[in-house]
Length: 156
Image 1: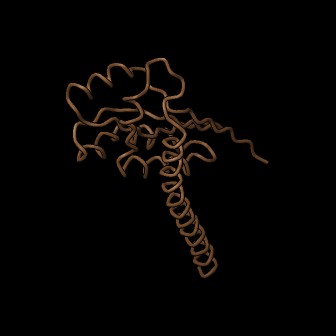
Image 2 (image 1 turned 90 degrees about the vertical axis):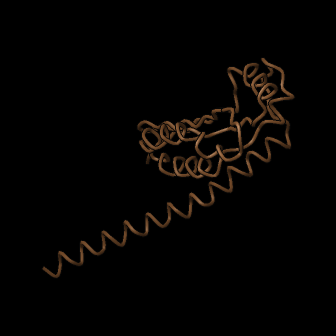
Image 3 (image 1 turned 90 degrees about the horizontal axis):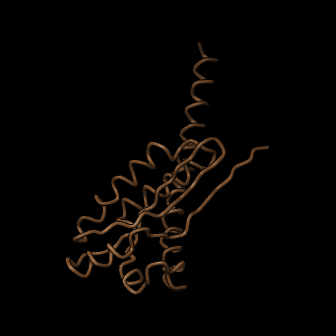
């Protein structure tokens, strides 16, 4: 029996006022990226909101979140699954939260409306479905590789 603790942090923005000012002055978008940190039996997911000047930059703006996830997200039981989900999410350009955060007031605990939170969950579920397929394919490759090694050893 194994124990795994999973922690998900809701969308929180420490510097909301400065991000809102940047969008008002320079335009652009506020995009949420997903980070995963894991150790032993604990995985923690958190959203990082970044300002992106143009839609072309959305994928590259999530580079640091992807790097953190790639280095530190794998090291728990569910780490590989959540890490693949986060990497897919980030490589697809994150999730645009500009409209909701521009309406939010600094200090407000609920930054997303119900419909926006639902869209965020749907986007994450889509990445999660692809992640399941990738994990299943990796498991099949691992099992096939192990079977081959056993067969090769028995033939020798």
